[in-house]
Length: 160
Image 1 (tube, helix red, strand yellow):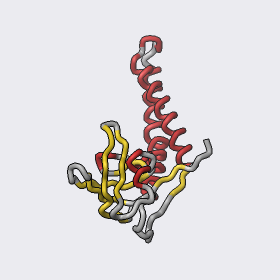
Image 2 (cartoon, helix red, strand yellow):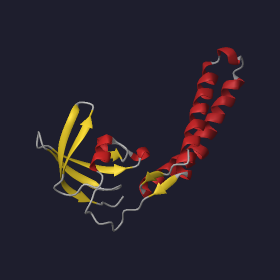
Image 3 (cartoon, rainbow, N blue to C red):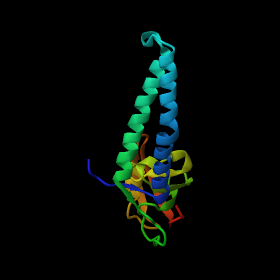
Image 4 (cartoon, rainbow, N blue to C red):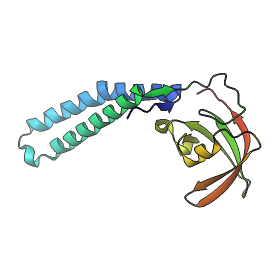
């Protein structure tokens, strides 16, 4: 897998911070937990040991995934970008044509996506449908509940 992974500068830094924490805090604490569990003896019935080993595997897997994402990162800085068309990093205000409800989304990398914060993955169906659209354009998006129609009201590039 040699594909680049798009992300904002903030998302890239967050991955690096998480990896550093895993290496310098979580993994050493986990090693200590394993050592303490071993000291209790009989590993076959030692729940603390098995839980610590499971956590060790989780930490190692997360570290490997973060290493991979950081190595393949394509950091996209949108500073000074003109807001004429929807692209990665854009914040888009949409109006649901059926309900007139307004919603705001920022298109970010997969690791940064958090729908509750209005940050959606650039690979999501909504983001893909919005790409290259302009203010005033209408877009149909196939979602699990059917098809929704939106009008693009505003495109801007906020500092990420």
